Length: 554
Image (cartoon, rainbow, N blue to C red; front, side, top):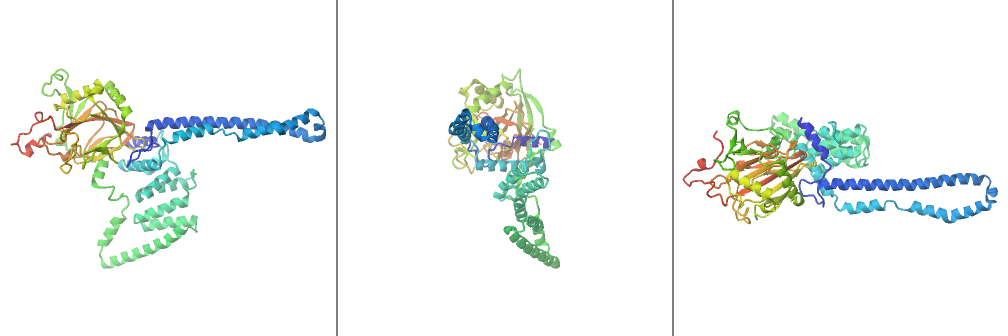
C-alpha cells in the first residue's frame, strides 16, 4: 500500500538536508553515514581501552585486598618479615604511584581527536530544523498519520521516540505552525502517557502540555486549550504561565459565550459563521496552503487526475520513426502519449542501463546544488525550493554524452547544438523528500533577461530522461492541467514549452514530487529557440488557435 511505502521512506529520515536552504555540511549525505560508522568504531575502541584499564585496576585492587587482609590480622608479625617490610615500602613509594598514573591516564584521547576532526562535517542546528520541516512537508503531501509515522509498527520501520516527537513539535512552534505543533506534541504526550521514558528531561508532560494548550488556543479552540491548561496545573499547580493562561482563557471563553448568546438573540449568524470558519481545525494557514499547493499535493498522491475517458481513448502507443529517419526505419522508437494538452510524449527504452551508469559515474564527482534562472538577472542561482543536486555534462567529455545528445536530436528533430548541456540531477529522500516546486522551464514576458547570458533564446522544449525507478513518490506533475508522469528507468518524456509562435505555454507549469523511498536520478536537456527556425515553423498567416496548440485533437 501507499502507506507502507510512505512510512518505509521515513526509515531514511535521519539525514538532514534542509527544505529552505542547502546543507552546510562538507560531505555528501551518504558519506556522513560512513563517517558515523567510523566514529562508532572509534567509540568501541575507546570503550575497550577503558574496560582494559578498569580490569587492570580491578586485579590490582583484588590483589591488594587479599594482601591487606592477611597483613592486618597480625601487623607486627607480618612486618617482622624483612621481605614484607621491603615490599610495603616499594608498593607505597612506587607501585601506588604507577596505579595513580594508570587511573589518571586518558583513554579517550583517540576518540575525542577523531570526533573533533569529523565534527567539521556535521550538520548544524539549521540543518536539523530543515530536516524536521521537510518531514512535516512529507506528512502534508502524502497525508501521513502522525501515529503511523511515530509508532513504526509497519515491517522493518524505525519508530520516533517521545523526544523525536517533542523536537518536531518545537520546530513547528518556532515557525508559528500551530497545526503541526499540536499534532506532534499530542503524539509526544500520548507516548509519554503510554509509559515511554524520554531521554531528555525537557520532554516532560508539563512542558508538552504547555506547548499544546497555547498551540490549540492559537487555532481558536479555547475550550480545548483551557482543558489542557487545567491538566497541566493538576501536575504543577505553581506553573506561573499556566496560571496566567487559565485566567485569560476563562475570561476569553466567557466573553465568547456572551457574544454567541447576543448573536443568537439577534439572529445574526454572519459573524458566527466567520467565527466557525476561523475555528475550523486542520488548515495549515493561507501562506503555505494555497490552491496550487493543494493541487500539487493531490497530484503527488495520485489524486485529481483530469483526463476524461473520451480524451483517454485518443491516447496511443506507437512505433515512431520520425518521418523515416535513417536511424529509425529498421528500429523505430516506442512512443506513448502521456497527455494531450499540452502534448506530453514518453519514449521508452531510450538509453541502456550501461549508458545510465556511465552518466551517473561522470556526474557523481561534480554534483552540486541545483540552480534556476533568476527572472531579473537571468543568472543561474540556487533556490530554496529546488532540493536536489545536479551536474552539467558536455558532449566532448565522453562519447556516451554525445550519443545521448544526438539521440535527442534524432528523435525530436530539433537542433541541440544551441541547447543547454545535459544536466544530471539526483533527488534524494533521506526524509527530506527532494523536490522542485511548481515552475515554468521557459522565461516569461516579465523576465526579459532570462537566459540572456546564453544568447540562444528561450527554452522551446524540455527533454526529461529518467535514469532510475522510484518505489514511491518522485512523480513529475503538471499542476495546471492535472497530469502526473511517473518515473520509469530508461524512458524519457518530452514537451514543448513554447507555442510555434514563440509564446509561452502556461499549461506546462510542473513540479517534482517528494521522493519517499530511494533516490531519483534524472537528466534534463533544455532545447532553445536558436537553430529551430526551419525545424519548427509557424507561418505568419496562421492564427494562434491553429499555430499555438499542437496537442491531440479533443
